[in-house]
Each structure stands twice: as structure tokens, then as C-alpha cells.
Length: 138
Image (cartoon, rainbow, N blue to C red; front, side):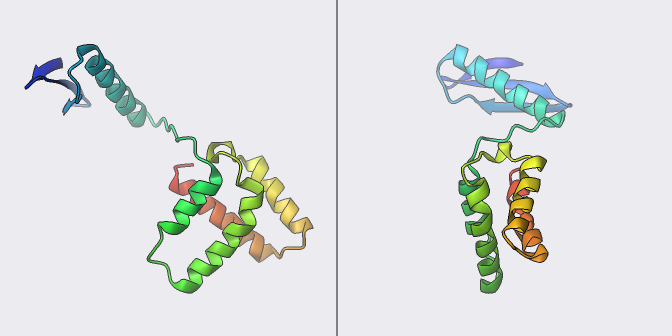
């Protein structure tokens, strides 16, 4: 177990939760291969322990990716979600998805209510926000 060379390229091997993990490090540098092995083992341990490390991503970009990734939607459903997303973007667009908190969501809902939006519309906008955050594990 550890790092070994095969055909001039370093590979790593270790056991995790009773399962053997063997993969190429895609490098000829032994030190780099060792650090790649440590990183892979650490990621697997964090994953098994329930630690989530979301990537920093702007909400605006995450929302556009979410809209584009749902090609199976009907045209009317896509139109509704695009409209609701357009109401959410001015408030959350410049934030990272990891910065969106319960307090910011409540503040958004209050501002939309003060602007005269109907309760159903606010709930649908919050639903769009929720779907985007859930897609990224938040």
C-alpha cells in the first residue's frame, strides 16, 4: 500500500472502509503522487464523515447552470422559472452560494412583500432559490 511506479507513472493504493482504492496519480514525480494520494484519502474521509465542501460559485452563475440543465421541462414551466429567477437575481446575484443564509432569505422575502409581490409569487421565487441551492448540496 502506498505509492508505487508502474510504466514510469506513479500510482497509489490504500484501503478505505474495507475497500481497496488503486488509481493513477498521472505523474512521474513521487512527492506529487504522495500528496495526490493524501488528498484523495482526505476527500474520501471527509465525504464519509458527512463533511461537505461546496465550491465557491456565484449565485447568478449557479442559477444559469440550473436553468440550462433542465432541458426536460415544458416551455411554460421553463418560462415561469426563468421569470422567478429574474426576481431573485437582483438580491442574490453577486453573492456566493455559500453566503446565502436564512437571514438573507428572510430579508429577501420581506423586501419582496414590501414591494407588493403576492405571497404565492414570493413562495415560488423562494422555491427557485431552494432548488438552486439544493443542486449544489446546500
